[in-house]
Every structure is written in structure tokens, then in C-alpha cells.
Image 1: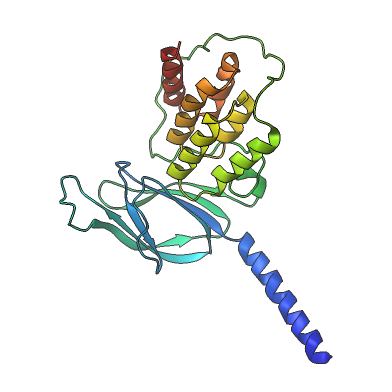
Image 2 (image 1 turned 45 degrees about the vertical axis):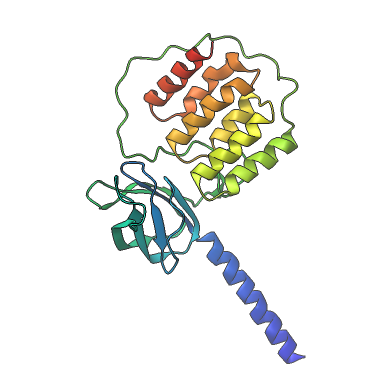
Length: 255
């Protein structure tokens, strides 16, 4: 009886420790300066499939070995990719790290977000979240005030759009993918098969970490919503005015 009680206590402690440990993990995003596809080997893992953006979840605190491989332009297909970076990086607990490899092969951190409040991160909660920062290391450009496109009063809720249950399933499928290019493909397939309200488009955009992906979804979803006259409401999700410019130019081509 005592042995069973002892084992029960030990098992409960292990579960509690695992739960606490899981809460202290971090999220790591990586890009390369030229936005070209690259492969990553994290710790003792083998290099993964080449992608333009990597997102790694549930990374424990500590120092981790990271190796980055990229195939150079005009490289013969039979030649292996070049190792452009290899070093150990420090990962602190409960952080979302946006990093990149610069043109000189140096590891750079663009921004770090504290995850002490899990409700502020789209990877940790199913509900709509605030926008994530733009990943590319650049400063916003000064530009004149952008006038809204055909401003109009907010209409009543739109009928014949995707149900809340269907949308939550789509959003969770996008959120659960590890890579932005996969998220984009899943989101586009879901959008093609349905009609989305402006609020659903905003919530879907919020899942993406990178400004370029947010812009791509905003442009793609334009032809799949009856709320075109409310599209100006999306402009606040973009960090840079150049992103809003790009969406406005796209909308003008669709008229």
C-alpha cells in the first residue's frame, strides 16, 4: 500500500513537472536576409526541408546548436547546400524570438516577445490575437497619409459566410502548421472553398507571424468576401505603411 502511494506521488510530481516545463518553452522564427529557401538542423536533428521561413515551437530554455544550409545561385544540382551558419544560440524561457541570418552569415535577433501572458500569442490560444511584429529587419519608411479606399459605414453582419465552427477548424489547422508557407497553402485552400467575413479574414491574418504573409492573405481573401467595402478595417493589422500600400494597389487592380 505504501509503495502504491509512493508511486502515485512520484507520478503526480512527474506530471506536474512536465506541465510546468511545457509552460516555459519558447517559439523561434528564422529567416535568411535574401528570403531564399534554406534548411535548418536544430540540435541533433538532421537538416529539414528547405523553406523560406522556419518556425520551431516548444523549445526548452538553454543553449541550442543551430546549423543553416543554403544552396547558392548557379550551384549544380548535385552539389550539396553550403553551410552558411553554425553556432549555439541562447533561448530563454517563455519567449517568441524573431531572428535572421544576415548577408555576412551572422545570427541577428530582430525582436523578442515575452510570453508571460499566453493570450497574446496565436500559437498558444485559439482566439484571435494582436498582430505579430514584422520579421524582416527593416525600418518603416516615411510616407504620406494613405486615404481609405471607398470608406463607407459598417454594414450589418454578412450572411452566407463560413460558420464559426468551420472557421475555427480552418484557423486551428493554419495555426497548427509549423511553417509559414504551409500556413499560407492551408489558408488559401480554405478561403477558396468558402466565403469569409471581414472579421474572419482579420482573425486569419493574425495567425501569421510575418508581414509578407499577412499581406499575401489580405490580397488573396479580397475576392472571397462580400465585405469588400469594409476592407479598410484591415489596414491597422499591418506594421508598415508599405504593406497597406501593397494591398491598396492590389485592390485597385481587381476593379
